[in-house]
Image 1 (tube, rainbow, N blue to C red):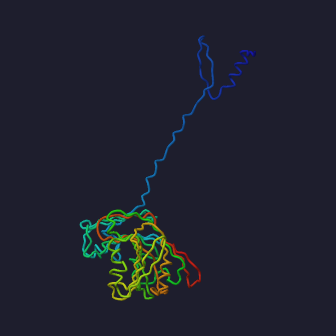
Image 2 (cartoon, one colour):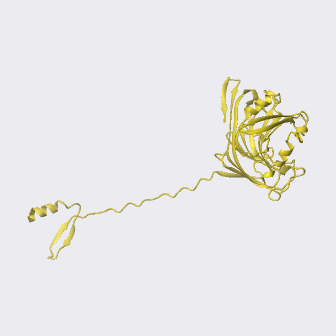
Image 3 (cartoon, helix red, strand yellow):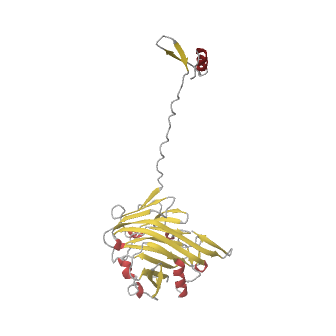
Length: 328
């Protein structure tokens, strides 16, 4: 057992005094001092408000604001979003009265998540050969509808290409029979003028299935002939003919699945296609190319296309440096 006398206790208590005292009154009226214990209030935590979500989307509508060769467009790097209503304009349709067509895209990643919507007359124009619009995304040195007749912005010549692929994944909805999902590319001569075109019809419309069948209209054109090949698990007809309705002969190559299947996702090997055409002397290795364009040829009705993913890449030999370059 330990005992403390008053002097020891007072000395011990005095040693606890820090920064002030608290007066206590006991029953006997005696007073004593004790340390003040101060607890600072917890600091108020200021939480910064969450930043407003960044909206990178923008919209192109058919009452065009940037007009060149009949299209409204947005370009970032090797990709270009295109709102093309050439058929509607050509035949005098009035925007918001006779039709609408809108493109919504992300300004920093225009090749992913882009959305096209349209509403055209419910029936095709005339015999169905007219395309009202071709909303699309392009890849290459320049967008094809804006390129004009020149070779200043070409990528390379056919003979220098070693690889050229296109990956695509889209979602279509609406009046599907009037939608022709098509990847399109053009050839140019040394004078910059168009020498040929390839249309790869991935999700053919009813009209294209009939007209581009080797037994029907385009198959009856001058010099028409057909090649068959497999690519990405799909069996294709490659119908080659002289372009219909042009003043100077051009090669028109129309490629369709032999069974009329509809393909909204896959990989396109453009070198495989070019090799077949070169082998049969259907194209010239000195011809120039600029890029590819993929979109929906709309003949009638309403619908939409969402571009979940679209990617292009080409490797070619630069004859000036004798080095290989990859674009895309």
